Amino acid sequence: MQATLTAIAIGTLAALGYAVSCAVWPFARCWVCDGKAHHTPKGNTRISRPCRWCKATGRRLRLGRRVWNRIRVAHHNGTR
Ligand SMILES: [Zn+2]
View 1 (cartoon, rainbow, N blue to C red):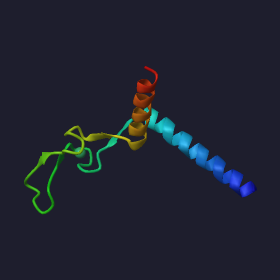
View 2: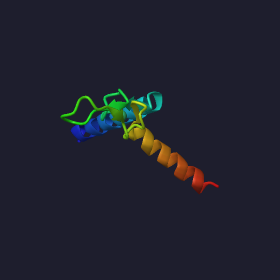
View 3: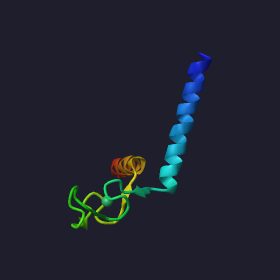
């Protein structure tokens, strides 16, 4: 029982920490272009095209922040 409570506490803390980090740093470096906003197809390093995943910004919205935005929009729509 003690172990279960400890696991729940650790899980809650981790979730809270992740939520806070998503609020403070909503953007993460794009993993497709590695933050360079352009990406080069495999085997052809001379061609560089704007990254479609991050819309050539080099940043992407973190998953936690996307979920948060979705909840906020749903809440907004529900209270109108
Ligand atoms: Zn990108």
